[in-house]
Structure formats: C-alpha cells, structure tokens
Amino acid sequence: MNFLGAEDGQAHMGAGKEGKKGLVHPVVWVTLIVFLLLPLVISKPLATEILIYSVFALAFNLLLGHTGVLSFGHAAYFGLGSYTAGIMYRYFNAPVFVGLIAAMTVGALIAAGIGAVSIKKKGVYFAMISLAFAQMFYFLAFSPLSNWTGGECGLKSIPKLKLDYPFHVDLMSSWNLYYFTFLIAALAIVILWRIFDSPFGRVLQGIRENEERVTACGYNMVLIKFVSLIFSGAFSALAGSLLTVYLGYVPISTLFWMTSGMILLMTLLGGIHTFIGPVVGVGVFQILQSTISSYVERWEFFVGALFMALVLFFPEGIVGTIKTKYEGGRKTVHE
Amino acid sequence: MEITWQLLLMQFIFGLSIGSIYILVAGGLSIILGLLDVVNFAHGTFYMLGAYTLYVLISLSGNFWVGVVSAVIIVSLIGGLTERLLLKPLYPRGIFYPLFMTFGFSICIPDLIKIIFGLTGKGIGYPAGFMGAFLLGPIIIPKYRLFIIGLTFVTFLGLWLFLKKSNLGMIIRAATRDSLMVEVLGINISRIWTFGFMLGIGLAALAGAISAPMVSAIPDMGLDILIDSFVVVVIGGLGSLSGAVIGSLLVGQVVSFVSLFAPAFSHAAIFLVMGLVLILRPRGLLGEEGRF
Image 1 (tube, rainbow over the protein chains, first blue to last red):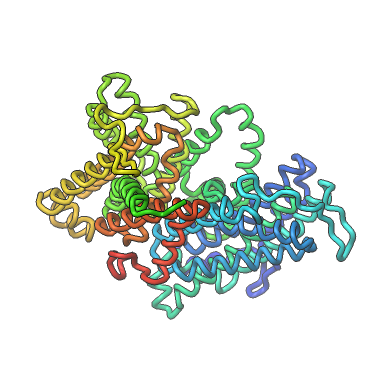
Image 2 (cartoon, each protein chain N blue to C red; image 1 turned 60 degrees about the horizontal axis):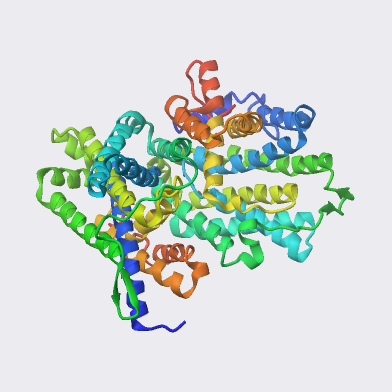
C-alpha cells in the first residue's frame, strides 16, 4: 500500500458510519474471545505462554512491521522486564502490579537510552547496534551482577505471588494465573491497537512506506521513531514481567539473543504487515513447538530451515498470505 | 598478583593475537556490509565452517597448510553459492530480508554440523614447528600466537594492495560508495557483489581455520565472534575497512586487559566501549559522516 492507502483502509474498516469507530477493530475482539476460551482447548501453561509472547510480538511488531525499524535486541526489553519484576518480588516483596509497572518503566527507560544513541542509524545498522546492547545486558546479568540476578541459573526463589487488591486471588492456581495474564494481556493488546490506529500510528506506517515523504510533511521522523521504540520497549518489558509471574523465576535465556531471534521468527511467521499477524504467528509456533519438538531431535535445524523457507517463499507470513489471496492481491494494513 | 612489565607485555601480545582474529572476521563483515548493505548474521557460521572444513581436510590430507588453503577456497565457494541462491532473490524485497535469511542460515547450519559431527568439538593439532613458546625470562609467548599476528598482517597487506592497486579492487571500492553508478558504467554489479561476498567469507573462513588449533572446532563457536565483530565494526565506523582494523586492535586489547584485571567484566566490557563510542563519536572512529 502507499501512504494514502492507510486512509483507504480506514474507510472499509467496517465499523459503520464515518467517524464512529468502536473501541477496537472486530478482529481484535475475535482475538480476545479466542484467548478467553483458549485454555478450554489447549493446556493452560501453553495458553499462558501464547498470551505472553503475543504481547511481546505485538510490541516488537509496532517497531518492525508498522514503523519499519528492525530491532534485533528486543530480548533486552523482555529480559530486563522479567528481571525487574523478579527483583521487585524477590528482594522488595512488592505487590504483583508494582512489579509489572516497574518493569514497564525500566523497559521504557532502557529503550530511551538505547534509542538516544542509536535510533538515528539507518536500517540494518540499528539492528546490529541493538543486538550488541542486548548482549551487553546478557553478559552483565551473567557474571558482574550475578549477586542480584543469580547469574547462569537465573533468578530463583521468588515468593509465591497473590493479588491482594481489588480481590484476593491466589496466583498459584493455573486457572487464576491464566485469567490474570489474560486481563493484563488484553489490556495491552487493546492499548497497542489504539496506538496502531491513532494518527500517531498512521505516521509510523508512513515512515515505513516513505521516510522522505513523512519528513517532507513536516514530521520529526527521528523523534517519532524514538517514541515508537519507547512504546515497544515498555510493552515488551510488560510481557517479560508477565513471564516472571507465570514461571515464578527468571531464566537468563530471556536476555539471550535467541529470544530476539525467536520473536522475530514468530512475528514474521504470522505476517509483519498486519496488526494481528504476530499473534497468529506466536500461536502457530508455540503449538508447533509443544507438539513436534519432542519428536524432532534437532529442533533448531528445523526452526532455521522454517525461517529460511518463510523468508524465501512466504515473506508476508500466514495472515499476510491469506489476506492477499482473499482480497485478490490487494494489500491493506487493516484486518 | 604482581603486575610487572613482562606480564603487561604478555597480555599485550595476547590482545594483539585476539585482535588479529577480529581483524579477519570483522574485516570480512565490513566488506560485505559496505558493498552489499547486508548485515551478515551468518558470518560466524562461515567462521565455524572454516574450522570444520580444516578438520575434515586434515583428516584427509594430513597436512595443515594444504588444509588451511583449501578450507578457505571451499568455504568461499559455499559462500558464493549461498549468496547466489539464497540472498540474490531477496535484494528487491528491501534491506531486511537478506538479513533475515542470513539469520536463519546461522541457526540452521550449526545444528546441521551437530548432526554430522556430534555435539562435542573436534580438536585440531598445531602445525609442525609452531608448537611451544618462546620464553623471555618469566613470560611465555606461544609461537602460534605470533604466527597468527604475522599471517593477519600479511593477509591484510595483500588485501590492501588488491583493493588499492588492482582494477577489480578499484571497482569494489567504487561499488561500496555507489553501486548504481558502477552499474551505469556497464559493470555487472551482481558479479561484483558475489565476489565481494566470497572475499568477506574467505576472510572469516581463514580466521576460523587458524583459530581452530587454539580453541578446537565447536558447532557454536561462531556466535560470540559474530557479536564481537558487530561491536568492532560499530566502534571502527560502519563500512570502513581501516576502521574495522583499528576497532579490532582496540577490542583485542580491551578483552585481554579486562580479563586480567576484572575477569567478571571480560565479556561486558567491549559493549561498554561501544556505548561510549556511540555517545562520544556516533559515526565510529573512522566512519564517514552521514552515510549510516
């Protein structure tokens, strides 16, 4: 689509009369309903992971698919979110929500720091620098800060979590844990949709399509990319902190670069040019992983080959490919 | 531990030999980056393939030197084939897709090596005449490390002469600045890209092959060196070959001396240097203003 196509898309969004839009697009509602019923179909741990990585993938794709900025170091925000929440629970006995908010704050701050020195870099170079910074956090957690982070073993012995406000909810039960994660994730998905669908989101998509033109329209492109990175970092960190709540400990692999690679793979699998694609990618990949990784001896070989085939033959991912077929080759950003 | 000048000298030479390996790997990465605008995530994989090819060739021919030369040629050819078959179709799709492809390659191939050669590393012996060390009083200088420094120097001298003096080298330098203009002048740019890619891969394979006797051939050996090379290239200045050399020497010394004085920080230190460079001199030490 071209820059003006975004407004085309708005016209057929289907919400009815002009100027009257619902809270979110019907596709987002459908997604939320699917998540509401998901633990009735698949196991609760798997469903919880799909929720968490969906938030992560949507936050990541705000940057990659919608702004056209590739960060190869998103493990930094996810992992730091996990560790922030873990440290708040473990050392300060913080309430669950305080941990989540602290994680988002740290994610936003780190994104601002990394963005300040690198967001001006063009295309692939930003990817390189963001990866290097992410590895820095990994190695910092690995040994110099291992007194706080637990080093190689990860951060363990986090006390059992429960909600005191507004209700007393024990988060050790997997049903409670799922629906707690669902509420937070649903809120995050709705907010991310609102960002995507806002005038700011349109400018982001404009940057992806044609940087020069957006600059010529008088927008401060660097600042807009920077803000997009901060949103993305904050929500990735939120996903990380949800993982801490779910697992009850923080594995150091959350900071490892493979986490950045996996979220890229899942996002690409679903389709980067649609809002909901990343969620589909996460779902398909996680279900695939839990069913066949026990039969396939070399899982990474399979993943790498899948990735290469995707890049060569299905660059638009599952949702993108289906949409192109369905709409007879017409490409729009909306579902 | 007492810090003597001998100890510092020894550490300096260690740093120099680490830096030499970085020069070869990051130099190749920088050529590919400058010429094709592709961040080659598979660079570490080709480094690893260099070591494994050497292992296979030594068990076939028994000669280290024949092994190194053939490993470089074979791995460059694999690199050229990869560029032609897997990367070339993706160039029209924008800058990210070639990067995605090299990333997939870098997950897939080390696992394939694990399937073929097993999970554990393969040891490779030192070549005759380069075992042992020189003793200068209390300090030990392994001969093989001096050899690596010397070989890197000679290789880079050759590369520099090639790029500055030969016609092909001139075309490569021109294409690095403006490939469209080179194409307009009637030169087949896609062959130049393939050749540049093979050149970069050849340097990585050489680095992998000559470091194999020190570290053994291990399936995942390419990972750390890949990310270290990114750091080197960012410090030196994106797309600048001389920047990559300076960056490598600097990072080599940082790794060597930090692991002496503060071992816990030995891995994190180079990233801090990178952050510092990005704050104080965003284009890198020798990078061009405004290009990246």
